[in-house]
Length: 126
Image (cartoon, rainbow, N blue to C red):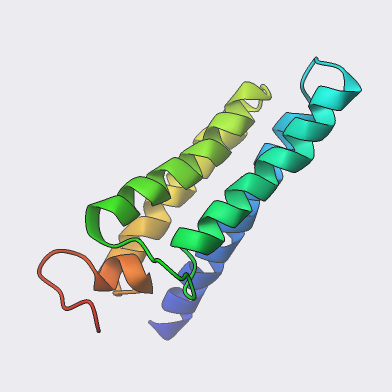
C-alpha cells in the first residue's frame, strides 16, 4: 500500500507542476501580440506560484485551512484544467480534472497533506 501512497504524492506534485505548465502553455498560445503573450505566459504562472507559496505550500507563512484550503485547491487545479481547455486541449483538460479527483480521493483516504489533516473531524496537528 505504501507504493500507492507514494504514487499519489508524486501525482500531487505532477498536478501542481502541470497547473503551472498549462498556464504557461495557455499564455504563450494566445492570439494576442507578443507583449500579451509574455505577460500571460510568464506573469500568470508567477502570480499563481507566489499565491501558492504564500497560502498553500507546506511552509506557507499563512497557510489556509478547512474550507478556504479546499476552495484554493479547486481554484488552483481548476486554473490548470481551464488553461488547457482554453488552449483547445479538451481531452487533456478532462484527463487533468479526472487525475485531480483521483488524487484528492487518495489524499483524503491516506490522510496526506495539510488539507487532509485540517479536514473537519480531524485534529489539525496530525
